[in-house]
Image (tube, rainbow, N blue to C red; front, side):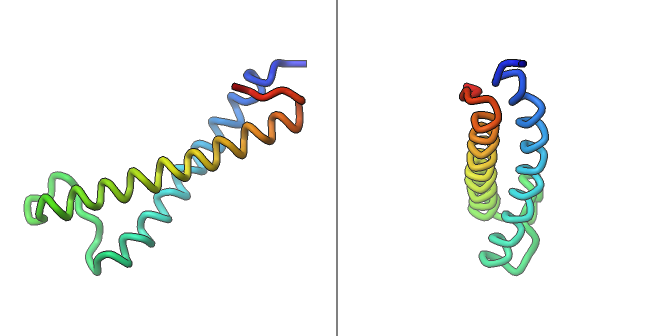
Length: 87
C-alpha cells in the first residue's frame, strides 16, 4: 500500500483547487457586506490605498483559513483511509 504522503498528494491537489474556488466565493460575499462596489484591483488608480489594502487583507485571511480547513480535512481523510497521518 502506498504511503500516506503519496496518497495525500492527489487529495491535496484536488481539495486545494476546490478551496481556492470556495475562498473566492466567500470573499465576494464578505466584500459585498463591506462595499457596494466590486473589490478593487491593486492597480485600480481610482481606488484609495486603504480600500485596496483592506480588500487584500480580507481576501488573504479568507483564503488562508479556507485552505487550512480543507487541508486539515484532507489529511484527516487520508489518516482514516491509511491509519497514518500524511505530514
